[in-house]
Image 1 (cartoon, rainbow, N blue to C red):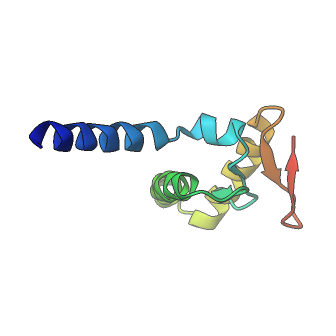
Image 2 (image 1 turned 180 degrees about the vertical axis):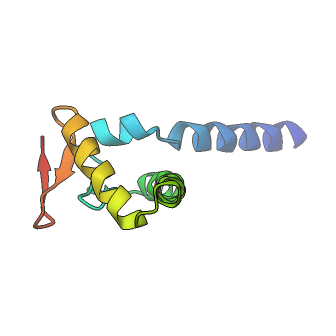
Amino acid sequence: MNRTLLLLIAGLVFSANALAMSLQDAKTQGFVGEQTNGYLGIVKSSPEAQQLIKSVNAKRKAQYQKIATKNGIKTQDVAKLAAEKAIKASKKGHYIQTPSGKWIKK
């Protein structure tokens, strides 16, 4: 019985690691895209993509706030500048958001 339990736990751990998604994988697979507000957005919903977005956007927000404070400008202004750069830097085939809010493949 202990062996079965260990195999089950090992399987669950492996499954959780297999489901973890990198940012580049999520972009390449069309789950997430760059929004015009400087943050990632959901293109095709999945629990892994939602968790990834939550994590990445929290880090981006902290960085934007740090830059804004250092330069005496609004966080929103930093985010907009970052959005412009991220959208320009997006690879062909990745999703980007148009100013009207529509998702398109670059």
